Image (cartoon, helix red, strand yellow):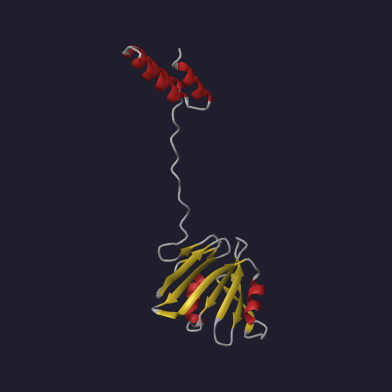
Length: 189
């Protein structure tokens, strides 16, 4: 009985019952307990121990990047012929991707989300010098606030169902006709 006192203290301190059962079985074997007692102790453990729940496999976060395009919470876009995705990022502030036309890194479309309103973003592009012009343009039933700078750069802004403003910067080396198929492919979410 003296051998059980230290084990009882460990159980009181949080040693699992499985460890106690294993220790008792070992003690019984070491003290001359027969194989029958060991088997019974082992069987008792199996019947009193609850079955281990199967662990659910952890599902990875949905992919942000599609194979050739992007799939973000506020928008998705598959590039049209000649366009390829470049830098992509997503954080708590914004979702962003740049697409380039051919191999010219200066011929680009940059898409980014903002927490501000579309008109606020367009007016910010004009700056204090009031550079360029602001109007609205409809593309596939989506109304975009458009800012056209004096250097030819075009900025488009619209509100996505997610509540974020989706902004598109069309680089000065891309004309409207080249950019339009890409704008038409933007799916707001």
